[in-house]
Image 1: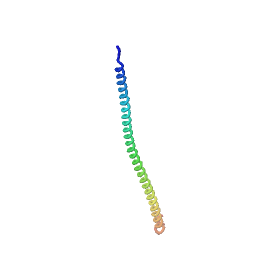
Image 2: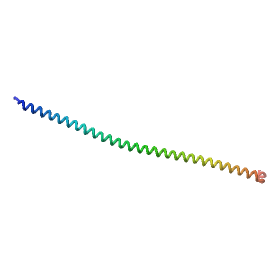
Image 3: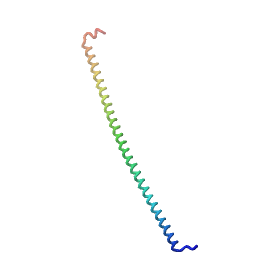
Length: 108
């Protein structure tokens, strides 16, 4: 069976066109896949940014809470020292009253 040259040329051209279409479709699908991955990456970056901002806020709140606790600790220590000073003054007053009271010496 003899095949005409124009038919062979036509078949080769059709095969080349089909091959070119397959290559174009492959490139288009690869480009689409890249775009989808870029979109996913952008979404992940956005979520990471939100999580980072929340972590920064939590850290700031923790620092603020620690500062308040330090302030309260300092105030409690100041009040303790003030109470000690007041007790010392009271003890001094009692001692002075005992020294001045003529009956205190007789009770002992």
